[in-house]
Length: 259
Length: 307
Ligand SMILES: Nc1ncnc2c1ncn2[C@@H]1O[C@H](COP(=O)(O)OP(=O)(O)O)[C@@H](O)[C@H]1O
Ligand SMILES: [Mg+2]
Image 1 (cartoon, protein in one colour):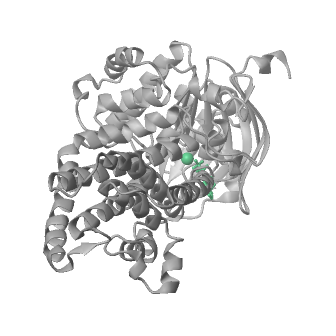
Image 2: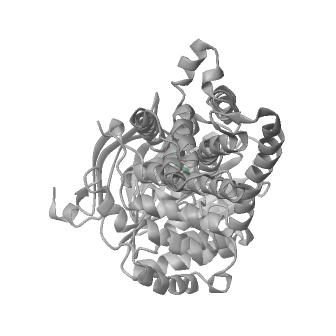
């Protein structure tokens, strides 16, 4: 049945993407300040401060370790915020989608357009941290540029579950559950601050099922210029998680918007 | 299907919409010929918006057959939307953009080319008298201005069918008159117009043909004049603010009558008889007028449209 088919990517999705991009462009200065300023503070404060005590981890300066973890975390965070708070704002109080659905654009175009937009925002914020890290000397190889498409993919991957939550949300408070139950544990457990090899054995298995682990596992070696171990496994995990979530999100958003 | 129905812009048969146990639209059939202004008149909750949403493929129907521009809405939704403009009941202009940007943004959802849209924007804005506000944010507009902008937005794709859901609800009389004259102009331009309303004055002024719906059912259909002639006497005496029970027996002998809220309505083709009655019962406020759609509705449902 139509309601359960996978979402289709059509040109109308770009119109939805463009709408968001135009709004963002107007607030770009403030947004970029946030994207550059916040990681700069974190990196300087935690990276340099703590780095002095920690020394090296996995053969790299702690500052580099943390910076590469932050890139992945920021991609997750930005895409999640956008796909929950911002999408909800457009869906409920602003009724933007109701207006769009009176045109030839369909729910799938909204879903795909929003996913692409969330990925784009992740791309901007992750690349900003990468640039800050490079300026501070934490980036060791041109392979770091290959991290950029992975940042985008990570954004897509986390935007999709965000849309699922939004499709159910009746108020902004709903997002706190997801933040507390899913995002905060990943921030702490998935190798952003310390290698997952230091976790107790069973936990190491558990975190393999959390997508942020795989994003960190690809992005970090690319930033440092080390070979990516199990590249296809990590990439496959991200793609699989993102695809399934995007499909479910499309079904749920259709159900929410078409009554 | 008769040739006349083939000419129609909207043609629906036995439309049904259920929300769980609630049957919001219960077997409504009608036909909107090309080039007319067609009205759906009914009180709040009658199922007007739900009917429109089904017509536009925004809401799947639970039953019935439906064609717009002679095509099935399920298979030709995109083509149908390309030729339709919609003014929704609640304003949903994009608050993140200016007046002019709202129009260009909307054009992009239709994938209209940039030049066409940029040419239409000043034309549409001057038509709805908002050219001077082109660069203002949506938040600075009054309710009437927002409605006019929503109307302009619905015209960005130069639609053949324009759908207006309660276009003047909540507007002051001046703003309402402005919308009415715009609707007249759009009809003269040859567009087919489908509107819903719960104001009979609006329906009588604008609609060439209308259906009256109540609780999801179609209760009458025709031109405003034909409906009034078919269901009502020519004159009515409306007695407001009843302070005591009317002498119901006495009334019933002379006139057909209805009670609604604190008002009584006495109907007759003999206006003199009504005026004489008013003169002899001067304790309440009595208003003599020609009958209208309100009286048709009252006759068919036993209560007022606004109630
Ligand atoms: N999405 C929905 N879910 C459940 N009930 C609905 C929904 N939309 C409308 N209804 C109900 O259907 C009935 C008709 O509503 P509507 O078409 O909006 O009436 P109108 O536009 O004539 O005021 C109302 O009782 C309303 O509560
Ligand atoms: Mg309505």
